[in-house]
Amino acid sequence: MLETLTLTHYLVLGVTLLVAYVIFGIAGFGSALVASPVMALYIPLADIVPLLALLDLCAAVVNVSRDGRNAQWPELKRLIPLMVMGSLIGAAILLRARPDILLLALGLFVVFYALYSLSGLKPQRTFSPKAAVPFGLVGGVFSALFGSGGFIYAIYLGGRIEKKDAFRITQTTLIGLSTLTRVVIFALAGVYLDANLWLLALILLPGMLLGITLGRHLTLRMSREQFLKLINLILLASGSMLILRYLS
Image 1 (cartoon, rainbow, N blue to C red):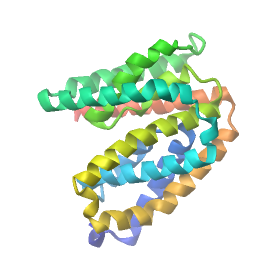
Image 2: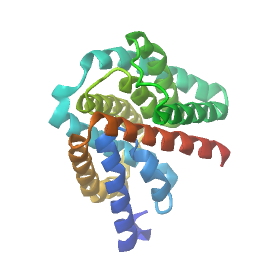
Image 3: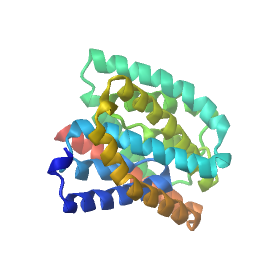
Image 4: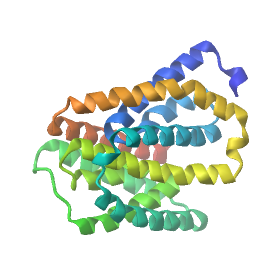
């Protein structure tokens, strides 16, 4: 893998990771949305998911070590068991059925939700704690099926947490725990025995660290309204990517 990469390829990958993790630093999710399509031009698809899982886990650990005191732990305690249950359901669906139509349904839901939120037709909605049940389960299901559950949690947390810093670090913590599960699975499967994968992760690590640092600083300078607008734009892009993935 590394033998085929030139200096130009590394520069493109580094800049891509920088942009992707600026988004992660702001929103606590969304790195794969930016990184995966570009990385697929240079890296085998089978290596991208475990590579991004490593980088996402590192990014989450760095963010939590900086701002973990701001995380809303009651929300995490509601969501984590449901996320685990949803992941088990998603794994069962993956083994027994073709989940493609679910990908389209999720994409359409996220796009319509983001457009509705951006339209300003109604003030930002506040969810009941009971809403953790559907959002936690569905987020877990789609994390297991497609590795794409972060924006489901973001919709719920956006309707529960007032402070943008608390939203960001709570989302990051949740994604970190979800990613840890995938890293453990990949490790048990022997994926991380490939030294090239670790070397590439180390090469790309500076771009990730710079990205999450810039993202954090940008978040501190945003108002809550600007922050929520950006979150909804990321949701819109995420939903659109899922629809394109279904159609391709």
